[in-house]
Image (cartoon, rainbow, N blue to C red; front, side, top):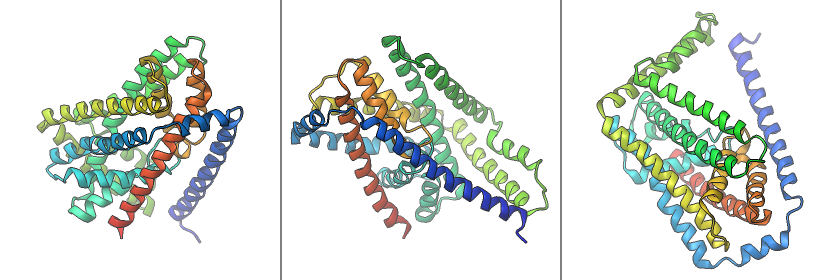
Length: 340
């Protein structure tokens, strides 16, 4: 007979497999909806009119963004007393990003890969690695949702007839409040994650294999939270720098999207840029692999709402997809290099 925790593991595996399959199906349906009504002749004209120097500028912008996007994690590792070279951290982030990009969910999935790479190549303990990745993601989410709330708020004011504008602002604000609450709890030494797992342990049989694993996982999380708490208390200046780096990364995101539209022959206003950036980033927080279908629907909707035509939004989407696939292929190469 199958023991309870193995049966639970099998049920969980089946549920995840079916969820991924359904997510891909839903994404393909949304993608099919997105391509309906697109004037492909105009899209081809926009893309073929791109100057090669424009493509080189987009590529150079992404090369500069790679270390900038990795600098927050690099600073966190320094605060934890386990410094790693910025270039190597950038490679690890690219490898983990390749996993996250193709994982159904809000652009997560590569975090365990990041922890494993630190452990294998730098002998950084799993609790420290988990603390570094966890704080990095929590800071990223906090700053991201703060910026997104402002962008979506501006978009709803600029386009008051858009359905669900204020609802989206409210939903983003709720997530932002949750992230800020978790940061406040960690600052206060409350250890929220391990406490939740301890509470869940109360509903399991402690002598069973599953119950023991839950208790072991709770101890692991507590150790990671202790490391994070030390970092907050001992290195307030570096922690502030990590927040500023997160804001600088968002400036780079805005700059890249403006550059893509400029290369396509359109100079975006601030409101147009804010709307496109918000939709592009929110697409990756939907429970679909790489925001499949949502990005293709969202960007043309924004450009159409601003009177720029759906073809511009779809062309921007194609460039973003090509860029992300190219970076994911590079990340896959790093993943094979560092895990084999």
